[in-house]
Image (cartoon, rainbow, N blue to C red; front, side, top):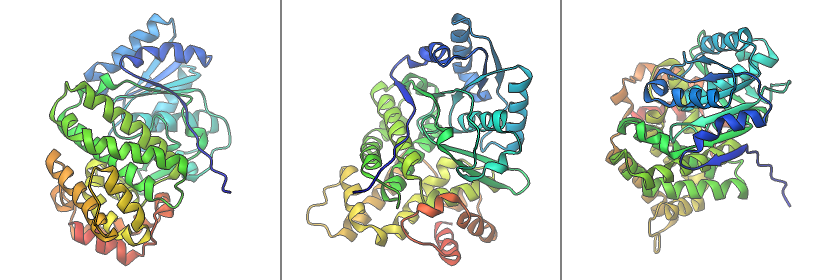
Amino acid sequence: MYINKFVTPEIIFGKNAIKQVGDACLRLGAKKVLIVSDCGVAKAGWLEKVIDICKESHLPFATFIDVTTNPKDTEVVYGCRTFIEHECDAIIGVGGGSALDVAKAIAILATNGGKISDYEGVDKIEKPLPPMIMNMTTAGSGSEVSQFSVIVDSNRKKKMTIISKTLVPDIAIIDPYTLITKDSSLTAATGMDVLTHSVEAYVSIAATPLTDVQAKNALSLVSSYLRPSVASKTNEEAKEAMAMASLQAGLAFSNAILGAAHAISHAIGGKFQLSHGEINAILLPYVMDFNFIASPQRYTEMAEFMGIDTRGMTQREAGNAAIQFVKELSLDIGTPQRLSDVGITEEMIDFTSQTALEDTCMITNPRDMTLEQVKNLLKNAL
């Protein structure tokens, strides 16, 4: 009998759940919090909402909103400086993956010191982190429940993947209502990230029965609700379903880790300022096709979770149907179809391929990949 470990924060889910942030901080003993967010979230009004709630809770705060897409190590340094200068003792993250990953990285440096690159890899964090409360405002990254933080090393032009159970937030707040301020392109890109998390967690060599139930539920929800969520900002049923999908996919990949699509996407995102979700959307069908022979039964199961009738199909036919479903979903919601659509050229492949092989997520990919195989996959995706 195998022993399975599954880590998760306290989870508060539902419309207006964001109102719980002040009470959540006080329950954790916070005296002064650093609120980490970005300009887009501030413009949408959610940062001000959290600030107002902190004021109502008589909870002193400081803010750090200088977070960019594909956040860099320098941003973490500045954020940590703000945390220390304002004598904060807890962190609130408000936003998508970028803001939440920076919030986690600030927490690392605040108590462990050094450089954020010191913690690249698995289980490098030695000292406990300050209390962390994460408020998700996109249905995509899953960072609010995961043991991941992904930060760009400015010197190496490389995304560093930091994995540690200490990065699992104390409390995750998921309010589907926050998704109404996302535009359709961001909804599409982040939704394809959720799909990629689900697929890669389900076929990961570290998958367990505990992660499988989360991944398959997320797959089913994304397959049914991503299109209507992209189509309408006001479709509350679709927003709630996608928020739940993001949550469950996050729980799945946090514990099962990911695979080649994320390893390659990290390599591209560390070097070029491109959307993580859009890169995953492009790569996922090619990675699925490459990985098929490692777990053909799982592909049949994934096809069924997507709503495909697999009766009478061989495993290869079911696998092809699942891959075609992903392609059609991506096309319907308007995410880029080829790497050349986002500016990637053949000259960039050598650097990207080598960097991808060094990514932690490659370890749990179900099929071994050589350098030449990564290069060929990228050439096919151009």
